Image 1 (tube, rainbow, N blue to C red):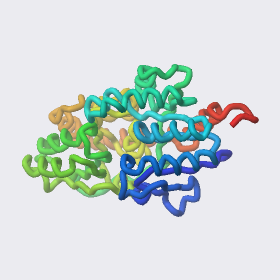
Image 2 (cartoon, rainbow, N blue to C red):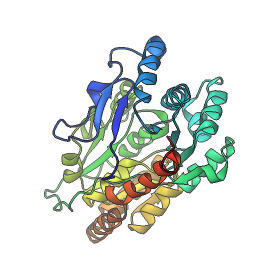
Image 3 (cartoon, rainbow, N blue to C red):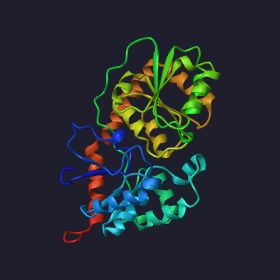
Image 4 (tube, rainbow, N blue to C red):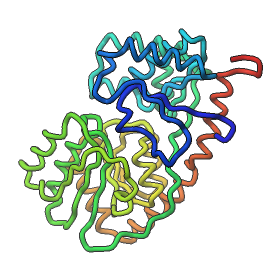
Length: 337
């Protein structure tokens, strides 16, 4: 977005998510450290956010739930337009992860207050509309990929599988662990990048099923590209998704995919790349899909090439132009905010 100056204001976890210092834009402005919680420091953080909001033309809520609440309230008190972003069907997410009942009226009020809402897919847009947002206030903008070059095909006899995502119920990593136990005849190593509340249970599950020596839980990682470059196959075992960034990263690196039919965006992506789709929540089907891909070297190469070609449609500049237009609509004509 060459004509727009961007600052990212982090409510918390600044040390974990801060931008690479070598990247001068956008600036990252932390409002509280990772050692606190928004519930304990919400009033102080909100006051800082309101002061910051007065210096900007438009406020964008980068995530659902608490960030949306904070952004819309700060924008209202600072008399600034605000754009919400929604990355998944919130009703489906709540059914799996659980969301406090009192959050729903607040989320509905926050989204309906927004000048516009960006949804990452048509499916997500429909879920936003069910919350009461008018269709003409919703813009579908898919997530961008990283714009990487196609990596060389990994060498070595051992097959390297990769899953990137939080270790929580919606991501279906428990299904992946159960599926791994059904692939004992294949020489593979499966790396799980990400952390979350289920990590201890997942490691215990792998031990019970006799596959702990093949699975690596490496926690949160800032540099992901090397993981994709080493992978023969990317596995997305999620129960629900919107337009997952991890899948777009796999596309950009040219990694073929086995994924669940967890969203329309995922289904369309994997169909176009000749990957394998399986039902969510089914370890046997996931294992069969992995076995099929790993057993067909020609399919792996073809699918990886098609994935990289698809990634060109999600280059950052392409998606940024769509965000630029959405931001300009929110700000209004010259002479406005």
